Each structure stands twice: as structure tokens, then as C-alpha cells.
Image: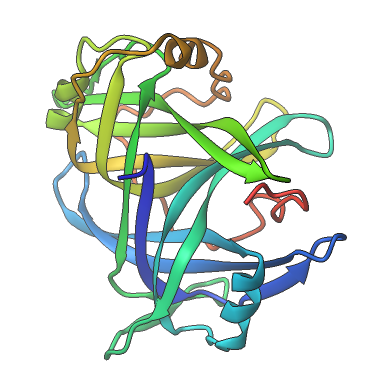
Length: 280
């Protein structure tokens, strides 16, 4: 099993965008939208949590995907890999996001219900948004307790990856923010920086907050919804060094006493298009 996997089932929110880099490489970008049924952390009430996940396909596969002529509202099954991307905005402030590198995209037949959100995008009622991540903790785990007695932990996982560019293998590291509650938080208690961790059934989610300059920041993170299992294997020296060199997490507002759920957020331009030198 690779260190990064994700499965999505949802509606094509809007028309697929096919473009070409200056060197002629095709890139297809699209958004998968659906809803997850979750219990509120504060009341236990079941609510529908919308998700919008940006996906990309690069190379000849992008043209093949565009030729299928999928329409907004079509329900698609996507399997792929979450990818960490970082850039500087127009004023030089560091930003980051998480997209999905789609490895397989298929239309799913069936009588699915869709809704139109306030931005005019289509979203499936129901869906799947489930990632598996194998990596190493970038900091010691710090568990906090809400006034209602629930344990919660926000942590970051570094994942080593590699790709081939111009015939050479290039190594890189992804950095994924994760949030775990209750039993999942307890499973991480006492873990130290550099220790390996397996994150199961994590939903790629998004929240927004203003930075110190008043600019809206869109934060992508994984909400661990079912299980966290720990891997009992030694930490390699290189992995420990990578964890030590993890980029600093962007300043965020103080955590709420009870974590609210993300409102209906349309897939606005939260991040720039894929860079023209995308490595895959």
C-alpha cells in the first residue's frame, strides 16, 4: 500500500477545465462535491457536512478524461493521492493547500440526488471522502480537552514521496494537518515528534479564517472520523530529520471550545491553478 491514498464519490461540481502548460502538457482540473453525515462534536446531532475537493489529472490522461464529456452533476468515483502544495501569494505570504492527484476517474450509474448550492455548483447528497495516510508526526502530540470533557488533538503528519522528472527520481515531503477527537485523540496521546502513524478514513476538509492582514485563508486538513492505528516500527534517521524540518504551521485563530462544522463553502478560487511545472 502506498503512503497516500484517497477515494472520493461525489458530483462533478462544474465543468471540467482542460488547459495546457507552455511546454504543451495537458492538465485537467475539476471539483468533486458531496456530503458526509457526521455527528456534531458539541451536541451529537447528526448533520450533513458538505465537501468540495479539487482534483487534477496531468498528461495524456487529462485529454482522455476531457473526451469523456462528463457534465456537471454527473456522479464520479475518483481514486488517487492527496498532494501538498505550497506557494507565495501576490504579497509574498506563504500559502498551502491539498489537492487530489486523480489516478482513476469513472462515472457511476444510479439514481443519485444532487443539490445546487448558493454559488451555482452541483453537489451530491451523500458521498465518500476517505483518505489513508502513512507518515511521521512533525511535533509532539498535545491533547486538549473541551469544556464538555471531549479530547481533541490537532497534529501534522509528514509523508515522504518521490516522482520521476526528466528520468531522475526526485524526493519530496508532503505535510498534512489532521484533527482527531475522543478515542482517536487518546490513541495519539504521548506520541513524540518523528514517530510513525497510520491515519485511516480521514475526510479531506476545509475551513477558513482571516489572517493578521485581514486576508481570508483557506485551510485544508484531514478530519479523522473512525480510526487511527499506530505502526510499531523504528524511525529512520532521515525521516526524523524531515520531521524536524517541517514547515511551520500557518498561524490560526484560537481553537473553539467546541469545533463547529464548516458551512456550505463553494469551491471558490482558494488556491491557484496547478503550477506549470507540476511534477507528475
